[in-house]
Length: 600
Image (cartoon, rainbow, N blue to C red; front, side, top):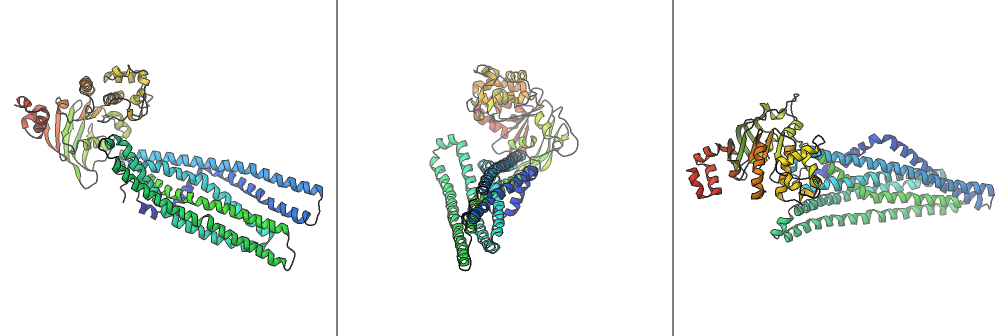
């Protein structure tokens, strides 16, 4: 199975296509009035268009054959024919626009729902879902679903109504021959069924391989510097080529189905039907005269019958792609791994910022525990530092405190209130987070600091930037706080990006501050400038700081040393050095033997 937060290809195949189709149709309910009007106009336009051959039949049999050229009657007949063409064109245009506008409104709603659903999912979902695969479902798959509404459904509705009208006029002309022509329908239905059955397999594989192509492309682009530094281009090209070849093979199989079951098969049925009609009139002419106008009308209706059939057959491929894509989209929309939310009816507020972990145990996969019985208390205004080797559980503590994940065992309290009782809005407003690799959005500096929060004024934005020493470089820029940032702030240095993220955090005045190795990507000169800012940021706030460089957290009131998910040592800097344990070893590794005098 492909590692993904959504159902696998086999699970998608098991999903009933009829169920998917009904679900897609449920999106038409809010648009009943417009669809009803469009359908009525379609009926009127179809009747007008199909009345034309009857007028021609009348002209041939009642006027041309008996050489009756009554001028007034012919003028009325011609005017009626031209009038029907014009009326049909106008009404067809109106109903087409109505159908298409409804289709576009539906797909707009669907895309917003998918986008909103993704934002409501928990990090567990994103941990196991390749970004490229998810992007493929939100973009490529919804685009295929759009084709269903825009190109397929309107075509099917129009052509089915058209076919019903054709048979109605056929029965009007000759009941027995019309019954013979009904025998064509089972062959058309069988062709459609065979095409849907065999093409669905290739469409599933095409969509899955396209998703994998996007995932591989996203990984390559995001890690381009590493790819080039370690000469991984050839390996990635081979991997991409393999997936691309599998995608191509699925497309080739689908082309073969199209080539066999679409136009050629339908054309064969058309020729058999035409042969049947001509044979019928030929045999009938042996016994009695045959009206040329009736022959013309029947052959005209037969041509008109296979035109919509061919259109529907050609749309079957789009229909199949849309159903497959809709199934993939709906698996995302049905994903139940939501972000944690509050429990209980109360609406507590964070006023002091006291943090308490009580015997917290946690696992990402519910098999291997990454945290084991974590217990500590961070009092208001204190700084608690988390140190330890990679994989010791530092980031997991942060993830639980921000409530990216639910605690499985134990309890986390803020101001003596269980974390689960707080609303996410309250939690996010009162807890500030500064990551090691800051994320900046496309926009200007001011927008990135206030994050489009209109409550934060320009003065508060500038004040926050001054507070963290970011104003010195921002004010030197040509457009100052309105300087545009590239994607992820690529046009700025890592230190400048981090300073902007500091200002963003301070603009929201949090009660609790979380620093995830906030100075790791900042040069020594910049670090010296912002250490004072960090001290000011921590002042009066409860701070949880992850640190790799022990020099940055020596003034912390409490330092927790983690190893394999457990707290193995705790105390302040001097107390831990005197214990001569893991912290002592880490300190010596970072400061060398000259630090022995201090440890002494």
